[in-house]
Length: 199
Image (cartoon, rainbow, N blue to C red; front, side):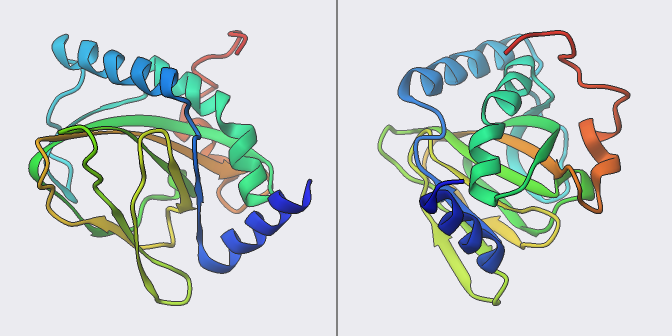
């Protein structure tokens, strides 16, 4: 592990979160955004009445999300300094006025990664808020392609009401390979849903 990665991992375990710029490059961001439009048009992204969310539609385990779950794992491991196992992916489209209420995630979301895909109008930033491990409230703006990795089952996180028209988000979830929640690998599914696929 290089010095920069080691510093990032120390910060992660001290604060409970770390920001990774350019987790997805511009072409990947555009590809994900278009794929989300197709998924919404086909009815796969829809309102599921999530407990902590208003004015949002989402999809569990989209194939492209599962691919990026693998693709991004190495950089997430560098950020936290530990080996990870994929849990599941999710993507969501929020509409104007949407709110993510303060909450923590379930054990399958031990390490959560929230990646901004697109906010319209273009250039608008919708921050995510976290209470770090010292009890400090932190407001974190993420440009498209940037992600925040945080202890999903420990760190309280939320978003204030959205004043843009829409916001697209890709979420990747992992568990520590040698951690307390490793039994939640693949989110309780019998095997990696992409088993046998080369990435």
